[in-house]
Image 1 (cartoon, one colour):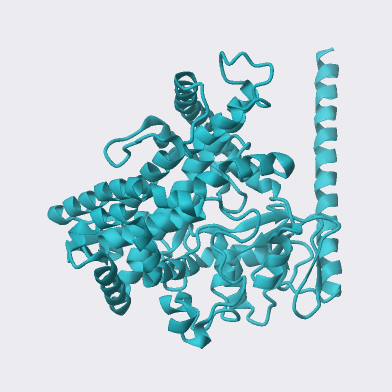
Image 2 (tube, helix red, strand yellow; image 1 turned 120 degrees about the horizontal axis):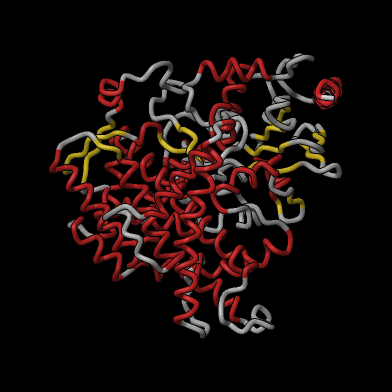
Length: 543
């Protein structure tokens, strides 16, 4: 009897394994055959291997890059290896990914990000965001649910509302500037990103939760959990297999989510119970609660406690605003300073602009901006520096899910089917392609000056600059990010001189392997979105 049960178990196991192997081989054959069909149609892709697709090519590129380099470098690395390749092309990375349609052509990207031809977010976005937000956030939602929450929060990020927030942001930047002054007095190498990250979180905490998180002053348990959670989020190729199969990954995801939910639920409940009336506040938490208090939202609710469905969505929104609200801003603060420190002429221009608009005493910039926030609109060169920084070091890309009924067309009239594909608008590849950007590798803020002040040959092409994406699914926090970045530069550019300290960092830590991308030591690494590698080590001096 024991032998019979054992034999049956082995037979079932062999049968299951056989079915899985056959399914795997069948899927592989269908994907490879589909790619060969596209190739026979003359559609662009790198040389394709019938057995391994483009996995060999990607493995070769990955070996040439630092192990922690961000995945968005892939598109431009392929362009450099195959300069004759069209800016829109297919990649076959199955089973690591669905077939990928890589788009670094501004007009092609505009086709699937436009209001009337909007491709949905790829399912991988939800897989990536799930450990961080639970998957009910603006990044992951679609259809009417997305429209409801997006419309609800739009007033909290309008240009007019940003003007009212300037004094609040200035207060947080004052703490940031004081911390940098302390670093000057210490005279030691330090991680610039740590300070930029803390500042950005404190700002979005005030805007989203109306809470002074004070990360610049001391650790906060739920923010620490959020930052730790970034390590465990995955989008496929950008996470090593060791991290994906680590059994502790799921414990960390659960525990971090538990901590985050505990603190945000506490804030939601406190806000809800202490104020039962609609408010005029445009903080994200109040906009959400105002909607909940509306007659339709509370029908049948005794207002004793928040509805479970609302709480689920509200938790996701709070977490995504803190997560997304700090990532792009902190990274761009770092790279703005990096590029200005490498380009003394640009630094001189931005300082001269601040002298002219804000007064010669940089210590009074905070008071001047708080009293007259509209002065931020009179800093065109500062804005140009920020935009050029975001061109050279974009923070995110835009992965969409292809549809059987959706075909893209390039300028040559080539038709690109999207069915079954991850349609990937690669902003790094777009921003670094010499087809669209003259003197592509140079830091030239003049590209983004008003027409009368910009050389005609540097005029950006329509749709070619899209670090926050363009269209209905563009980042809702764009205006906040640009306002905060202008304030940071206005209050710090004249106060300090920065020197990057990667050589010193390398001497201390002795890293192994390649540590540059295209000769750039300050390359971007994957940590939620793109971040400066090694925390951007610097030394700072008073100017």
